[in-house]
Length: 207
Image (cartoon, rainbow, N blue to C red; front, side, top):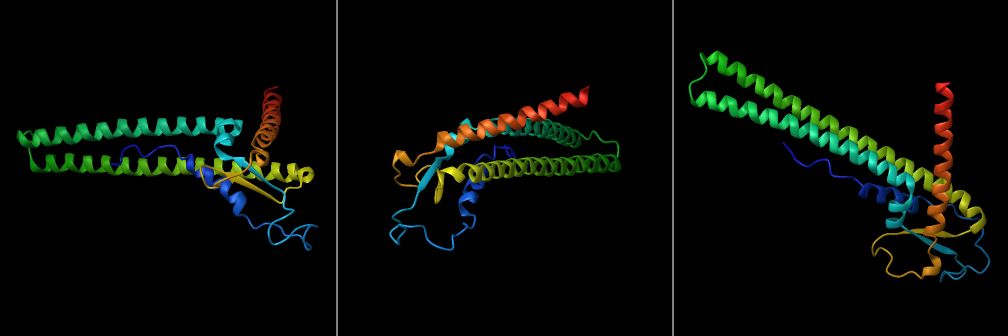
């Protein structure tokens, strides 16, 4: 049985951010005044992925959800795995000590262990699938919230290109192009507003 299979899938979130950059850009019919092949006139900015992941409340909240689900799944599998190991040890001990009254009894217990092992494998697959679905939901929500916010944000800012910066994928960028704080503050404000509205609806349903 595989162990420690439920490590956090936070790296997948970076793929969600990257997909925002990889999406086909909308091209203007005419180039903006002052644009040239050398890139002169382009208005560019970047967002630090690491800061976004640690300071955007949506990321922080969903990370806790994923971590809790991962820990619960790991504990369940460890418990079931230990029960299976105990059953196998007990079977082997009885087999070595001629503890079975008949061949049929030994085969019956062996078959029960095999079913227990199959059940554990199916449980593992189901829990892995559930965690993968949760992670996909997280990534989709992150991507959608970013794209929605950036669309509104850029109506006034009018950037031609907004990049994600993570590690050394951008070898150099002047700090004046960094809009991370702006994006995080705006995202958190929007997230808080959405969260408050959701809580208000829950309270109304209780009345």
